[in-house]
Image (cartoon, rainbow, N blue to C red; front, side, top):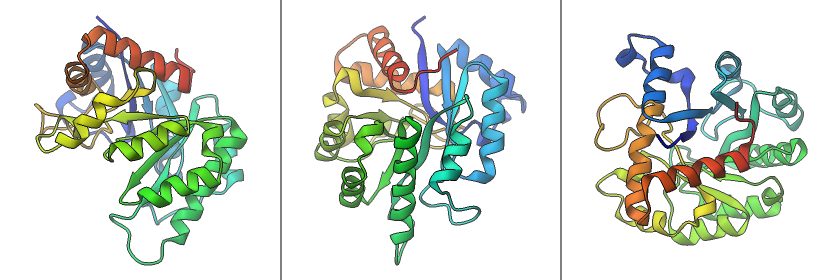
Length: 260
């Protein structure tokens, strides 16, 4: 079976009800679906200990450190605090970071400054960025350019923007990752973008426990379901499932390294 990698999930937040509350059974289901590795993504300092603990206890998991653009509670990240946590060998990326103007209103300079802090930390640590952007296209690209995000590289995770945005990110050296959103009925334009991303810049993810793909909508999302994303992308791009799996797994290894 071709190996898949879930490049973005939140294992500390999964609904394990389908697995009788057992994370081990969740990993068994992922393995049965051909998902051999996964990146557990941190969204605030409060959950970092749980995230890194999962990575330490499971050789198929690595993790990131960062504070999501919509998080308002808890410790504000600094370059120094990010670097301290990123020194852990289980941490292979900085993020998730970026800009989200959809759920945040009013004066948002704090969000832009937080994004800059993450980019500076990624450059200093020599680790790639995991970038979230929603309704903030121009500012996201502007800050990436101003802060030299291309020197760190990384991925535009859970991509939902148009081809112009994808091309600008690709020009900065970033990868583009597609989640279960690409399987949704109304994602016609996004599927057109998914056809055009170069083979060597494509990644797949679940963003579990969020965004369960078709045909599993309405059920808890978990890493095994990244297979549905891969199958759709292979069909869209006119390649075999094995080729899509091989390309996205190699892209992950090249970007994040650190696979067991």
